[in-house]
Image 1 (tube, helix red, strand yellow):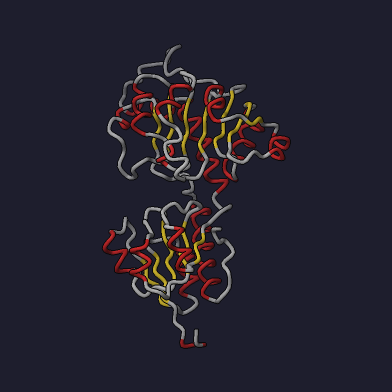
Image 2: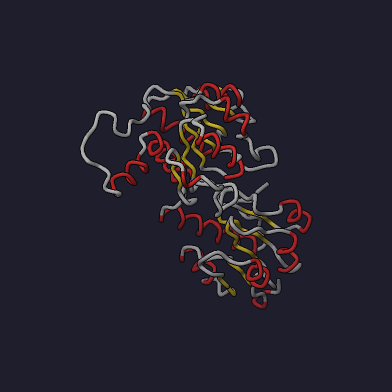
Length: 325
């Protein structure tokens, strides 16, 4: 940096809330923003050229090619998400590039969406909505859209991080569910605090009436919920996923739902987004939302602000606060 001669260039891969963009523009830096819709690979490689900072969205793969296209001056990749599986972390480390994320701010929103999905699939809300809109409703009936009871059932949390523990707390305190969990790191403090029980993954899947996934996507968690594991779940069980799509073998899930191996599923994320596995949309016992668990105005504004602040700190020569280790 050479005093006022340094004019950083920031590339934001897609439109984000104005608060984040304005924070960067207020520095009188060059800020370029990609399209509101999905950015093409060609647009991404062109847009990052000469960038000192990239503010990326989880749908963009920021790999060696992108980092090379940006150039050696690239200082930081600020991901607009908690997860960062879209970024080649080894390559960023090799090049000395900061990688940051937006933790904490979306915990409540994602937990609330998870709980909404659980109730929606258990109470058959989306299915009943479609039925009513199609003018099939001819009057009340004692067996019309019988759903699953929730009170006094067992909820299995896979991944007891910020979001998983918030779901556990709310569901136990608000709805009297028994909570069991699996995580690679056992948390005895939270076990005592929330009165929850640790179980190995397969034992959890055998025991739980509802299973909610909150683990990060890693090579070890790819297809963590496989065809074999779907078979050991209760036939009355429901699977909820607001983490990452590839954690579930989606083809196996479609078969399990078709064959009533499990009772239902609710998904906010998909294995090959935005593509869906053939047959998934034809099933009535699944609720599908388009990766919107954190989509509240307040949450998305906070994410934009946090990503921008990470960039500002890094380009001012300091270590950004939300550095991914």
